[in-house]
Image 1 (cartoon, rainbow, N blue to C red):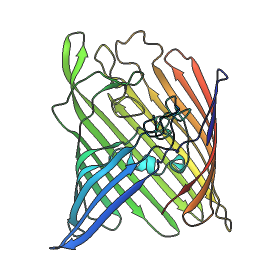
Image 2 (image 1 turned 60 degrees about the vertical axis):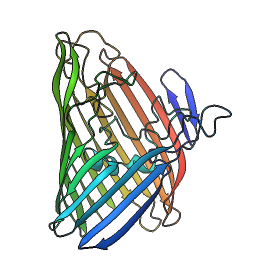
Image 3 (image 1 turned 90 degrees about the vertical axis):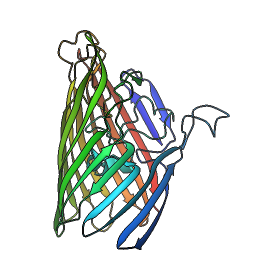
Image 4 (image 1 turned 180 degrees about the vertical axis):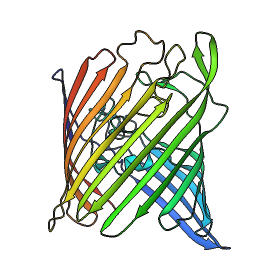
Length: 348
């Protein structure tokens, strides 16, 4: 359950899922002809609706995030074909404390109008999303590994209206990451990642043209004796904010630059095993070259979050969070929201 209060005094409440949706997945595996073969299919039912007599057809509708197969061997790597989580931004969201909580509810999720909340999406990283892909993962060489992916290309969207400003794309997107992880008393992981896509049909004053959207990210986490630190940073052109290619281009056809990141610290209390965590993050979006007006365009989204996560059992966790979200537009006008939430999450 979440309760949010905006700067104008408006208050909303919601009984809904958090950032991680309700999830049911089925995976099958076998070894044959020196190949490890697997398949995965999952669906994510919505938890709430906003209108009476719409319990089966309301805004909290079901999603289908995974439908893929993999084959390979630990000696040479593996291939994945189908729909699954993307590579760019994957480590950022999987290490975010609000993955098991709520974080930012967002305008579309307050009052139970969406399948999930936003967590820290758009206030520290771009959403990795789930998309059609052909991915190769290398073997793990003593902690070092890389992944490359050909992915379904994105249309460029206007974030305020969710309207596409480009049509179907001629070329796929390309994503990749490289990472190194180690274990022991002082354990950790570092990674670097990138995304690039040629964007066709960008509407400029001289007519439709092509451009290329690019973004890179770097991050790392370390843990020692119950303490964990996480840091992440991204920088891109033409990729926009919150989601890939959202508000990445101005109406004059020029790219907008964006960057952001987050830092996070957590501590597991010995004995009781309660995890206390706090984080801060920001996502910035600049006007494009030659762009005038459009003063309501977001300039930055910033969020502080503190939370407590207590395991009642090895599978069941209680969650309590407080988040403060501040949004600022291109002329400095601000909107602030305070979000308090509590709930439970079960893995089985």
